[in-house]
Image 1: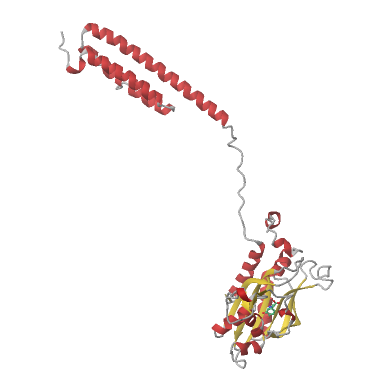
Image 2 (image 1 turned 60 degrees about the vertical axis):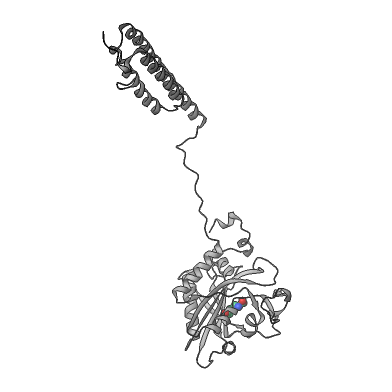
Length: 359
Ligand code: DAH
């Protein structure tokens, strides 16, 4: 008779079997996928698995016990195999149900991603700026809340000029005036005051463009808005001539509208330039043939310009004998309407995506 080993008396085999059975049930209960089941199967039923390791102990125990536990272990094995099989069936069933519930067609194309883009007025502004930057102009900015001095007086706009009228200009009540000194304060009616502000600070040569928002006390219609946008231009140096003005603006027009655009300069009047002109472009709607939009003239007004009035130089204490300069004012909405052939300015402000997505 073999001497029972410490580990292999029948009661320890009994408790090993009970443990295996308990552990197996617990672990199987926590299992929810096929991979985990196959690992468990290996752990319990594999060649080095826990049931096998107890079977290996049987030769060391009493013959009667050996028979008894041999049978118990074989039952445990069969039972475990059944448990694994049932669990696998259960998992297969669940995953089938899930895929039925989630019946998305993965082969369908996705929803198109809509990218945002800049507002058409911003696109036009950026384009104008980049053309002038390539010609050596730098961006300058000024305040939207201005004083009468910069908006009118230093630009040689006389006291009785209609632009100063309440009907054209939004004045700011004295109680909101943070400039102090009882200065007359207003919302700038154009970007031209920035010319004066820069010339007060910077000596020639000067080449600046000034994009910005401007305000006019005006009824809104298809070509007017109380708030709109301009880009001011100013170039000051010794020997700047009207030829420089024409060449610069013609170059701009060709880059902006295309090489084939025709331009003409017409005499005009602005208090801060002398002489003053307006630049027209050949009508973009009828290619200059004459239509209702250009009033049969074949031309459309594009911008105002001129040689800086020496009186303005006096205000900023530039030597009017030494320096000359040219200036121009571009309406961003106006150029956007010409470029995109939009006939109502209000469309730019309504934020209707059906309109905006076209640009
Ligand atoms: N400030 C003018 C306006 O708002 C536009 C303008 C015209 C600006 C001629 C200029 C210029 O600099 O030379 O109507």
